Each structure stands twice: as structure tokens, then as C-alpha cells.
Image 1 (tube, rainbow, N blue to C red):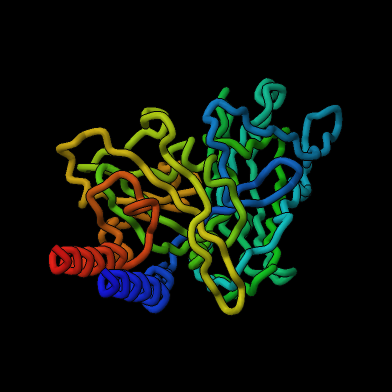
Image 2 (image 1 turned 180 degrees about the horizontal axis):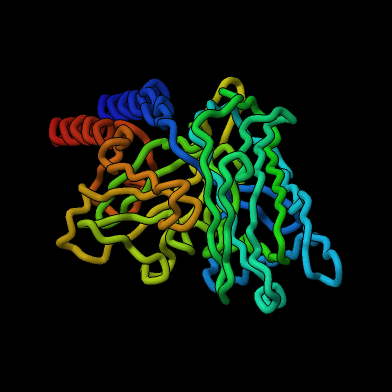
Length: 362
């Protein structure tokens, strides 16, 4: 009996020491992310952010820029001059260092006002669009040089687009402030639209502002974590199905997920050049038990999926699978609520020692 007690004490000590010395391989997970286009949306209160409202019914902001024309001789003729449409500045800088690249894609939703459509003048609109990064001129476009003029005499807004192939700034350290300035001139009054899912006016450029951590496939659930250079609410992107899971080529609708899913919570902490960033973890539930869960694709975007400025980033879940990222149970806390690498092996060894000791005693 004394020997049995000693054996059990040694086994418990072995178990405890093993839990201490087994390395946590998940902590070594690295981030992946290529240069992809990200769109900075013009927001209310003249803010600038990649975030798009998840509520597709939310109305856009509509502004009337100052009149750019002057009537001459009882409005028989008109002259025009450049007027500021507005300036939109990011309230907060990026959270970590990022690289930048071209092309810079510009877009603005607008229309000629009802009053303007009733007069006898065509708008003949031309725009100037400038992207500033920490006060430095990063990209500039003007219709004036190319002679392009634009009309939108209809009830719904039209989208003006332009592109600058190069960007004058190659990187943005943590805290960099981004800003866009827009000017126009026209022979009629116009109105502009921005800050909703349909009218996402703004500017896009290439950057490594989105980085993916690890993904997990556990039973019927698939999850992944990511970090982003700008602080946006991931729930807006999930509710709007900008961030979604593709299963057998079909995108899951977040509103049709079982109760409690998708789960959005804080993920791991990652270190980027001395800056600690807490990732966001999103997990979906796949109701179809016959679906090819292991072939799921994470489709990531912060703006509408039809946007020509920033295409969704599609990543196979298995391409970024983390250590121990595949399992057969729905509860990701592991046995006895413990998520400890090697715990099951240690427990098996402990059981063998216990049974051997018990049999010798009998």
C-alpha cells in the first residue's frame, strides 16, 4: 500500500511538471498577409475609414457642394470656377506599420440636382481628387488635363471613377493620418453621396493592412483570426456579409446562422515591430453535415463585394490552419475544459501508471 501511494504521488508530479514544460505551439503562430487593396470610405463628420455599415438599409450622407458657376447677363451664359467639395480625414491613424503601393483607385457617387436638371445647362462636371498621407501629396488626379466631363441627369446617383497608377509614399508608420481632398467645377449644381453600403465614395490603394493568424476546423465549425491596421467594428462587416465563409462555393449568410453564430471575440495577441495587437476571432457553424468543411474558404472584405476598388481577399482555411487547428468536437476548450497541448497524452500515461500500480496491489 505504501508503494502504491509513492507511485501515485510520482505520477501526479510527472503530470504537473509535464504541463509546465510542454511548449505552447499556438503561441508561435505567425501572421500571413499580402499586399491587397483596401478602400478608405468617406464617412459622416468628415471621417475616413475602411469601415462600411453592415445595415444595408442605412441611408447615405448627401451633401450639396458650394455652387461652382456664376450666371452672366440674366443667366444667358455661365462661368465656372473650382470649388471645394470637402476634405475627409481619418480621426485615428493606423495601428501598426504598413507598406503602401499603387494603383490608387478613386470613386465618388454624385448626381446633378433636380433644379440643375430643370435648367437649360449641362453640368459638364470635372473633378480633382487628392490623397494626402501625413500631409504629403501621395496621389493626385484631375479631369482637367484629360478633358473628360461628366453628366448625371437622372434620379439615382452615378459613380465617378479614376485611377492613378503610382503612389508617392511607400510606407505608413504606426499613427499615420490619411486624408482625401475633392474639388469640382460645373455649370449646374450637384450633390454627392457617401457612407453607406451602396454609395462607398472614397479612395483605395494597395497595402498589407490586413493580416491573418490561424484558422481552426473543429467539428462543424470553422474559425479564423485576423488583425487590421484600422480599428473597425468587425460585427459591421459580418452583419453586412462582407466577411463571410464560403462552403462548397456558396457564401454563408450571417443572418441565417444558428443561434449564437457567427461568434466574434478577441483572439490572440500578436507583436508587430514592438506593437502588441489583439486579433479578432470569427467562428461560423456549418449546418450541412455533408459539406466539405475542410475545403472552406474565408472571404474577407470591409466594403461591398461588388466594389471595383477593393476585391475580397479569399483564403483557404487549410492554408492558414494553426497547430492543433483541426478537431472532431464542437467545444474548443478541450478535455475537462483545458486547452493544453499534449494534455491527452499526459493523461494516458498517468492512467497507465495508475492501472499498473492497482493491478500489482491486487
